[in-house]
Image (tube, rainbow, N blue to C red; front, side, top):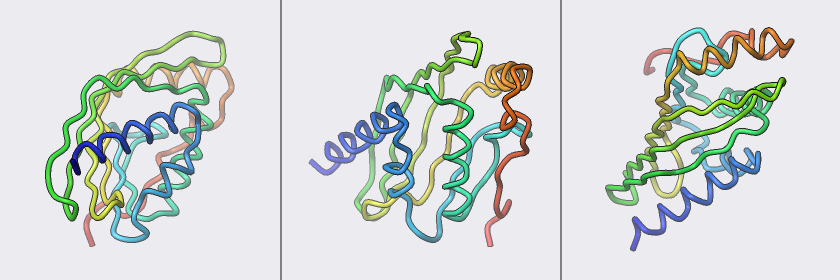
Length: 157
C-alpha cells in the first residue's frame, strides 16, 4: 500500500512539472541535508546542489530554459521503507526551442525519500543531445543557455 501511495505522489509531481508548477516540486525537498544532481558538465542545468536555495534557483532556471517541458513516465519502481524509500522513474521528455524545433530526450530520475520528503534526486539523461538544445537556445538569444551550472558544495561535508 505504501509503495502505491508513493507512486501516485510521484505521478502527481510529474503532472505538476508538466504544468510548470515547480513550487509543488520544491516544497517536497527536505529543508536541510538534501542533494539534487543533474548529469553532465558545463551546461546550465548540470551539477550538484546541496542546499534548498540552490535547488530553488535551479528550478527557476529550468522554467526559463524549458518553458514547455513535458514528461511521459514509462516505468516506475519503488522500494524501501518510509524512512528510506528509493524510487526510479524512466521517462521520455519533450520540449521545443524558441524557433519551434521539437526535442525529445530519454532519462531516469532516482529519488530518495525519507518520511515523505525528498532527500536526494539524481537525473540521468542524454546530455550530448541536451547540449544541442542549449546551443540552439544560445543562437536564439536565450541568455540562460550560456550560464554556468548552479552548484553548491561539490563534496559531502
